[in-house]
Length: 209
Image 1 (tube, rainbow, N blue to C red):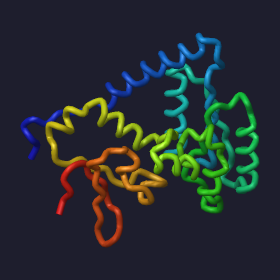
Image 2: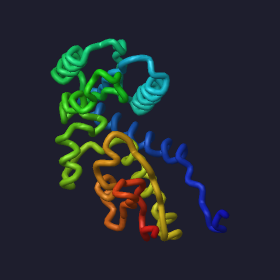
Image 3: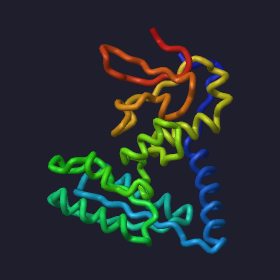
């Protein structure tokens, strides 16, 4: 049964607001004489979901004034060939942000690939150095999903305070089971729900019994 005071949060509305703010920041940056930011995305294989995600990312980049490129490689690419490509992009001064779309084919070590991306260009925030910075509450690039959820919480905080009990999010990707959600979101009252020694979900407020 729905609560009488339930409120629908419009993700689309928040996204438009955030994109407008980002667009303004980018144009201010460029107007100050700086180079327009450029994002390079490496897409391996023919996974339909990955192609859809990457298309949305490049569209979002264009919408806020960030130039981008998608570098396609076949699923048969070797790990060493992919690492060599990443190295070239790391050393390319025209590339400001770099991400390798996951998942990768089974013969490629995703952790090794994530750690090959320069921490300074690591848009996904998956490099071990950036994960360490996050855990130590230092400046770092947050992975997109928890960052997006945290923006929703910040921008609609009155809703969280009003309901006051629980908010749940499950399995947020590559690092979700390795780092408690309280670290992702840096919320003191965030609790981690455990069952049989496995982390199943993260809750805000009172932990369920």
